[in-house]
Length: 216
Image: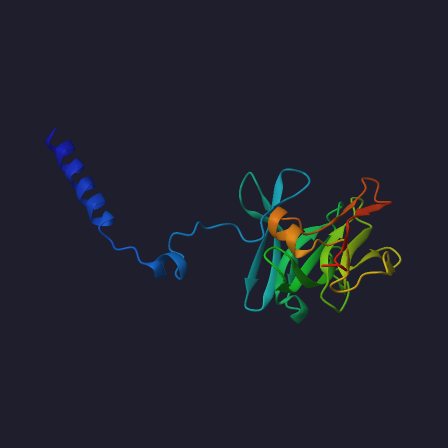
């Protein structure tokens, strides 16, 4: 009983001491002491047994394949010191998970929207290919993984991975007038709508919004 009483006192003192520590605005907003830790670049893979994470070490960019069961790395899908990938942000896989679409040099536009320079990495050949040299918006694999759609200068484009060919889908896009495949500021701010196009399930067609701001 005496030991139990002593233990309770020790715990109470520890809790009391901890509760007396001053919490500052710097701790909250600058030092992020209370910010929950996450897993960098976490994505679940198609088999449901693995997930991917990212790592940046001394200029090298890595994407690891990890086991859900063990939490350990089972394979490194990307290990590159290519300067073009040094500012890697988000990434996505195609259906077969043998190609990775990597966003770099990302620049914010409004609250949610952004534009990036994208690269395609082939995990089998280890070749890195530039999608376009310019910053584009919302680059997205088709469901079958054979195409990539994106928005540039208010127009919608589709890149064919097999034939290495880009096709411009719309031609009337113009700043402050016509927007194809991306939302305007109002829809983004009020409805959190950003990417405004969607692939069909068979990857043969794309549905998209056209915003006309000519009279605004």
